[in-house]
Image (cartoon, rainbow, N blue to C red; front, side, top):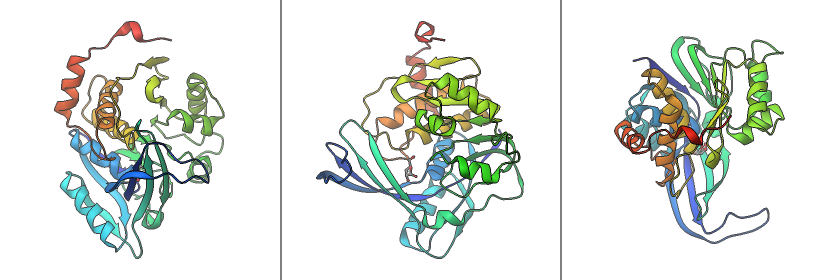
Amino acid sequence: MRTIAVIGSINMDLVVGAATLPRPGETVLGSEFRVVCGGKGANQAVAAARLGGRVHMVGCVGTDEYGRIARKNLAASGVGVRAVRKVAGATGVALIVVDAAGRNLIAVAPNANAQVRVPRRAFDIVVMQLETPFAFPHARCFILNPAPARLDAIRSGARSRRRPLEGVDFVIPNEHEAKSLTGCGSPARAARELRRMGARRAIITLGEAGVFDDSTGRTHPAIRVRAVDTVGAGDAFVGAFAAAIAADRDDPIRFAQAAAAIKCTRRGAQSVPSAAEVDRLLAHRPLRKERFHE
Ligand code: RIB
C-alpha cells in the first residue's frame, strides 16, 4: 500500500446548529453548540486513515489548547503527526452554522495554517487543499482539492503560466469551486477546462446530484441518505478517494461517495466511517447502471 501525505489545514470547528442559516445582517438563534476538530487537511487525513490508508499530516498548530487537542486527535485517529509543527500564536479556527437540513456556512481564520510549507522531499501520494499556502509538491500522484477556490494561489505556485494545473493528477473541486476556477457552469465544460489548465483528470462533486467524472463523461448518482451535517462531506470524499487510490481499489469514486454519504448522517467534520462500513453500504447498494447518464 502506498503512503499518503496530506499537506493542509488543521482547525478547531466552533459549530452552532440552527433551524435556518443566517442571511447577511441577520441573527438567528441556535439550538446547540459544539467544538470539534476540523480543517480540510486534517479532515481528509483522518478520513484516509480511518478508511485504511497509511497517512502522514504536514501542517501547523498554534501553542494554544486547541492546537494540543487537534494534534492529539490526529494521532489518535492513526495519522502520523511528526510533520505537524507547533508555531507561535493561535491554531486555525472555523466558525460554522449548520441548519436543520444539514447545510452549512463556514468562515475560517487560518492562524497557524498560514505558516505551513510544502516539503521539498518526494512522496508517493500527496493530497492538498487551498486553506494553506500553495506550492507544487513532489509526488508520484498529486490529488488537489481546490477548496476554497483560489486560482491566484495555484498560479503563484504553478510550473507553467498557461497550464497552472500541470502536475495535478486528480483535481477534485465541488461544483461551485469548479465554476469559480473555470467560469463554466456545466460540470462537463468545467472539467474540460480544468484539463486544458493541465490537470490529468477532473472529478467534480455535485452534492445531491452526484459526482461528474471527466474520464468517462458520466455522472455517478449520489447515494441518498438523510443528511444531518454536511460539514466535511467533501473532505470525506477526497480522503476516501486517496485511500482507495493508495489501496488500488477498483472503483475509488463509488467508495468515496459511500464514505461521504455515511459522513453526512453523522455530526462533526471527522465523523467518517471505517472501510468495513463503506463496503457494507456498497454491498447493499449495487451500482444501478440505468441511473448513469452521459
Ligand atoms: O470542509 C470543512 C472544513 O472547512 C471544516 O472542518 C472547517 O474547519 C473548514 O476548514
